[in-house]
Length: 158
Image (tube, rainbow, N blue to C red):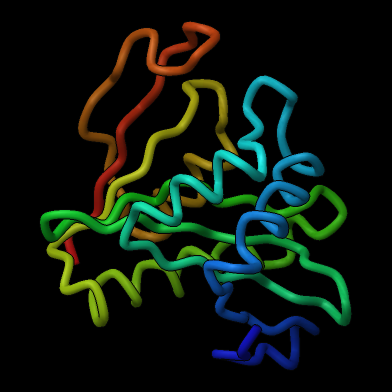
């Protein structure tokens, strides 16, 4: 892991995750942050990241990974595949900082013209975070999730 930015006042730093370490770290974070039906398993992460152009970063507080964001890049579009902050570290600006880092990488390294994300219709904290970061809702998607819950597609021009 390499440190890419330090947030001293907040007590955490943003680090890049490599292809080797990302699947395990992301799977553990998913367990701590999401309901079982919404979790991506380590094997699934490994397969996705191996066959994708991706960027993964995490917020590290001491030895604890408090949150992470993963962006997959294709055809000039960054897609925020997953982002999460474990419950005990929420509401401290970590999600906003991870989203900012992921967006900057899409624009600067990925040469993306926009970034997109999906949220569940009831996930108001995630939607609020995206709105504050400049995303707009562009599409309502019926039955988007495996449990048939509807989703909202969000987008931000870069």
